[in-house]
Length: 497
Image (cartoon, rainbow, N blue to C red):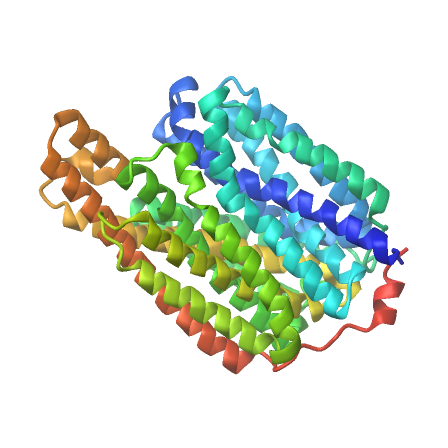
């Protein structure tokens, strides 16, 4: 087993790995206008820059977790991180929109290896209180990319060419690979047969559901093609569940869902991600289109989320020891709900001080919720299945995040367009287009109407997020055990080679 000191060094390497993924998730958003100009990218191309990453990520999570358990997590983690760095370079030097879409798809594949296996390794490196503390550090590192991505991306775009927003991954990747090679012990799960039908059904189902949700967020929830795609994906996932009940070596052990800690932790982490990612979808637009700030200024104004997140994660570690995970998770979700409902009072003329308060509370709520929820779920996994079990957690969070952005984005867009009934069609497409139209025509009345319509739509989406978080808090009190069972130290020790 890793020594007490080296395992914390290994945690630092894992944190660097997830930070690289977190940065890439958000840094692209500030570069889209530049990419549209320099690569002559259409609106469809811009959408696929993000969609190609999400689709491959969702599709590859479960197979990557299985291969990590079978082939060795250290080997695949280093390989995935190296591929992530190479794909980042390919993105930076892409000459056409098609090349960038392809490179983004490879990035999604690499992230699908890094995300589940980095979490899985925590279950074999740490136990008890140390695992809770390690989980807080890991979640905080992965979440730092949310505000840091736009911040770094905005600064780089102001000073360098657009490819630099992808090259920032390279030094992080190099440091992570070196640290993993030196300090991460080798581990693997049971050498089970690869469940090929399970891999195919889960991959096809997750691709269809994720793609349908993304399309519905753009086309509307009444679009027949989007709804048919989602329905087909759900049917494939139902077939996946049916097969898992009969397979000799199933990809996912469905018995995991009979464990209250695993099921509750997985569902509640997904709920928190739904609310938070939906919120972070609207904030950059609020700061840029309504507040008039540039990319760097918008990223800077997201920094209170980090402060709240760090404080919340630290308190979660301390409070969970005394009160148990159930009360801490419920409290975190209540805080997210309260912050969302406070944010729903935002208007086009609200000062940044008010915004800073409620986004700080949102970050603190996420910090209180996510580490103990993931810790409870991971604590229910045996080391032999920690890779595919963590991949299942990540897949649920990824699809939940896509649903959050799509649903809350649809609520925002519907309310925005409804308030601008009678305005020029171009102004009703998005708040960015609306501000551009109003500024180009010099129509101050339209500009005020556009900004007011956006904050109204954002307020409606925050109400939905707040209600969902409150429902999650109630679910936490019902589903979660008072205290999660501790994994057996001897089982953890035996999983390390």
